[in-house]
Length: 462
Image 1: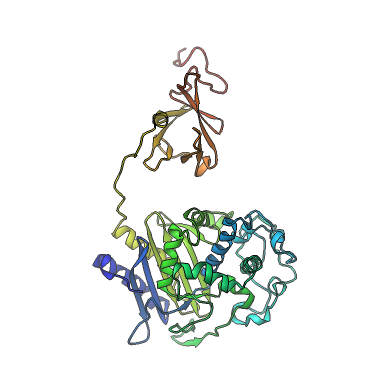
Image 2 (image 1 turned 45 degrees about the vertical axis):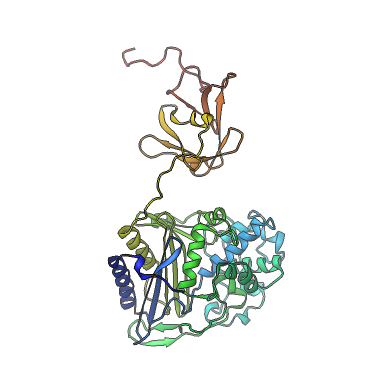
């Protein structure tokens, strides 16, 4: 993959290089490689290495650990979109006899299934997967540690179950399904279950000495859907573009948006940190921007994929050490550097192609009680409702084709907006999930619940 280094300004490129150089030096990583994505393609690639000579490029494989979970989640969402399953289905419906079948597929995706974080000893990441040939070996005798659906508790066995679910419903190994349904269509030819040259070796760095120890490279077996994959910054850059915008050959933009939407109750500490989890994707708020993606680690490797959809910038960072550089912070910084130095240029404003008088009549100022709102007709055909001042409930609405509109987000997600008209067709008020919006605060003549005092508005002396 060839990337254009000239698409970012020289100052931006130097700031990116400085950030990864700092991460590699202070984190004492044998090597660190990174890429930045903008406008759906890689626009910068950089690397730092302790080895003199040629450094790793965008084609060198590193193990990506739990970023694998996002790939597995894509496979599950594909099954949902095809109507093979529903995310509300209990696992038992499609994969009976696991002992964890009470959890729904959505709960497994969001790590709210109540399952343990790890499989029983020995430490699965540093031992052969052949030690755990069956799902029962992965889950252990007591797979559930928490009530199903009550709390977010990250679970590697949970994604093992999702991989087994894919195999059961597709009738083929997880790796084969992933290759045919995701990797091949997206052109991720350097993403594989087993390392393919050129690839980095995994190292442990002594915590108190500048010394290295090679880490074993184990095949995770049954646990593969939770963390097996190897990939490159070039491939993960393409995957980041897919996660931001979708690709109908694999998963629609609406479905990848669903993956990026918080789906798990956050722990108290996570609320403070601004972090939660979607469906196979981590969600966090950092430096005032919403970031989605996933991190990953296995002995010898660290990985991070960070996306700011609003800024249209993503970053991939990979390193070949067990611990050291904080790649989540590095990825967020790479996104911030580009977003702040070269902010996204918005598309030109364009008017509506056609104006529907009945829709245009809805536009303008409305009152919910005494709260003032503005309803705007957008060029994309949606309605946008927002308070005139300050914060508050806001949402966009999509036409249902029958004069009603459905909320797309926030408090009004899924709620029906219905214009109420007189027999002659003239507009009286808006009904939004039983809330009445009038042109004047508590407008006389409108169907305001509780009615309007016949004496009207008055001063305090009255």
